[in-house]
Image (cartoon, helix red, strand yellow):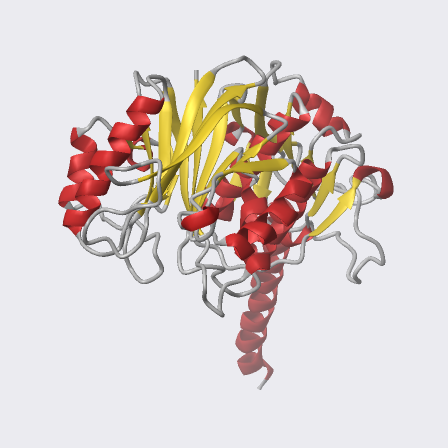
Length: 439
């Protein structure tokens, strides 16, 4: 009988040995896997957020994994200006919305350093100083130092550009770059001294669904240097001016109806960056200096023009902002003829034209604009988020920024700003945002 039990016993012993072997091998694999936490991590959750000293990260350095994003805090320099802090808050909101995490915004002086931080501006963290060594005066950028993301400019005004760029690249590349990893190799440094950010936004007048808080939040998310608005009546202008003036904006432009009332195609600008040299509002008709319209137009239509000098280097350019009629292409064609004439009479220098044009790229009036020498900045931009997307939520691409001139305007970035604010689209148009280099 014992003779027959020996064979099963031997088989059982062999199975035990094999299981032990694979169990040990599996434990070794877990301990050295570069994407998982070490096996000697505590089994109970720590009572405080791990820091670099009490919980060192043994994974491959200089890589930020998407699964880590929920651990990150956004750290802003306590001494940063209000605009940088506003943008840092908006970045935090963007990360939370994009990645469905709960990142928090805190200042460097009030927070103990941790392994998982997005550093905005000249913080007291050593990683910020390390990244600053890569920047020349006038430059800005973002990159990974250790396992921290640093967003920085050589000055506060350039840090603003860096934050906007990073937020947009997160949205632009979320399915490729950031979702998998950000590495030290993905560092992006640009010369910010030439950059001018521009937004065009139809804010949707006269509708109970319009959302002043959402609209101004969208604008502050990007903090454009120049902002052309459409469908902004007196009430809207009061709201926009009250809120945006706190961020250093001034504006030019009068209403299209008698006594300067009615909708404006106003231009807001950062008074700390530009000096206003001259401005004018003209009607798109044969009589530009009086309230008027072309035959067949449903509304009076205007263009507001403003010539600015950039304070940093004295460069001069003109921004024109308009809203063409929604009737038919024949009317819009006449208005483009007048628009082109009055802009070119106003300036012979570099200029950009923003607005709600109520035509699409396959329309003959768009082709008319091209034939007059205008170029669509969205198609020329080096980087674009939503280059082919609709800008009107009803389903069309009708909001543009055109350039005209020699031209010294070089489009760098373009975005259709289709993010939700508090779960809603603030207007029936998406804002369109550009970063242009004026060299």
